[in-house]
Every structure is written in structure tokens, then in C-alpha cells.
Length: 414
Image (spheres, rainbow, N blue to C red):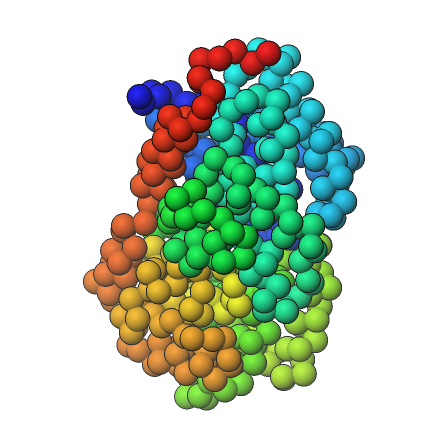
């Protein structure tokens, strides 16, 4: 049996898919939810994404495209809420989702939850609706704690993730490494995990002529090193800063760091102070949050994009950079080895030690200026990663989930 048109409730409680990327709670997961929902809608499936209101100015319903919309629901008041505090409001959120469903006479075939907080709310709704529940964690608390970098993840998160991994209909993992971690740390059943890689919007992330991109951004002929992402210790930015003084002085270069908002102000100030200690103030520029429309210009203007993370569940930034024709230096985390062609489109380093990072960055900076053929070759190397492919694989999992689920999908919600 195959379902032609699915009706899917996506839960993304703590992170709004249309929020500014690079903030405290808006990263790769927001991109994932938005891109997949958009493509599901274009294929004729009905998608409602539920998130919490953070600002009273947020419209209750925002259309994201054909058959796809974002629904803001009040939960625990306005503004950002600490994740542990937000946990106590999950029953309220679930109740508001149910009220919206009932008031609009809706029925959903299944629930697709993102992150452990949404997963817990999804558990509640699954009990009420008696429909399948698919979970994607995006990061795992148990893995993050192995690095002892930044704040320690609470035991409540690990307990919830373990329960979800064992009890939900299916878990979607972005890499085989994440699947192995789910089995190792949470006792998840291998047959209950589907590995589906993330994608890249190659229509949006396209190469721009490097000279044109630099002129648009007001840059001179200096070599440009780029970091894009959230400003938090796990991203390894301090290690990248340590690598800068180790680079040879044979040519001028600059480092641009994109990301960060008011909630990462402390970490930003700490890093700026570290820049002063290293005496590289003239080299490093913190740009803060930028509109996504600007990113292809920065990727294209850059000579190398560096992803020095201690941990990534997948790693969208290297994909975006390569799609714009710019090589990448990345730590061996997430999908780095399957994304980057070592020594051709960049380098994968075993760890983010400053020496390892600086050695590979220097090799790329020493390369001759990339010509059009080189840029297009780098771009072509990631052509197999697309959100269309990701979405089609998700649809197959949804269809299989409905087949496996014991309750007839035609059963009306009581």
C-alpha cells in the first residue's frame, strides 16, 4: 500500500524554521525543516510545522509554499526560554497543537519531530492521535557530553532521547555514525533507524564570480578565510583563531566569522578578547548574523571555508560552500568524509588542533586562483546531495511507517 498524499505534523518547538540562521537556536535543523517541508508541499503532501511563539509580532500562520505552512502557538510566554524550562511547557504546547487540529477539523497521518524537546511533545500527541511518530534528533546529548566542551547536557535530555530512540516508530539519522551512536548510547534497534543524508539547495547556493563577489562585499584582493555557524564552544572557533598566527606571512589574508546573536553575546565577547590576546585584531572580523541571501556572495568570495567543529550531526556549511565552488577544511565529524574529496575539494583533518587546521588552510591559500572550471568542478562534487533526494527518502520512510503501524490510517480520531 502507498499513500499518495500524506498529511504530516512537523514539530520544531524550540527553533523557528524561518528564524535568522546562525543564532542560538537557528542552525542546520531550521534549514532542514524548511527545505524538506517545502519539497513535501510541492509534491502534493500537506505539511503543518508547529513551533512556539517567541515574539508577539509573529503571525499565527505563515504560508511557506504550496501545501506547507508554519504555525506559531503560544507556549510559556514570549521570548527565548531555557530548554530545561521549556520542557515543563511541552504538555501545554501539545495541548495547543491538539486544539488547533480540532478547531480546524484536521487529521494528520503521522508526526515528524525534530530535536528531543519536540520528540517529547510528539510522544504526547501520538498517544492522543494514535498515529506513527518519526523522530530526528539532529544532535545527541550523550555524544555532545563526550567532548566536555561548553555546557554539559542534562540527564533529562539523555533519558528522553533514550526513551524516544527505543519507542518511536522510526528514527532518522543523518549519517551512519549517528546511527551507531544511537545504538551505542541509547540501545536503539538498528532496524528502527533510517540513515538519510541532508541536502543542499543548489539553486540558491551557486558560484558567483570571485571578483564580483568581493567587490559587492567591499573587499580588496586579500585572501579570505570564512567561518559560518552558531557562535558556541562546540563549533571550535577558538581553535580556528589559534590557527591564524601559525599561517605563513607570505600573503595577506582575512578571517570573517559569520553568526551569533544576542544570546551568544558572552561567547562572542570571549572570542573577541581572545583575538586581542593573540594580536590578530586586524585580521579577524566578526560579522554577526547576516541575511541568508548574502551567504552565496561570502562563500564565493572566500578562498577557503573552515568548519573546525568538535561535533556535527551532519554539517551543512561544507555542503553550501562546495556548492558555491569554494574548498573546505573540516574536522572529521558528521558527513565530512563523504562530502569533501580529500586533497581535491578540500581537506578533512582528524581533529581541530590549530596546527592541523593551519597546515591545510595554508595549502589551499597557496593554490593558484581558481578558474571557472575549478569552481564548477568543486560544485559538481556535491551534486549527489539534494533536498529533493532527501525528501523522497523521507517519504519512503513515512509510507513504510504507515504500513507497519498497527492502527488503520483511515481510523478517525476520537
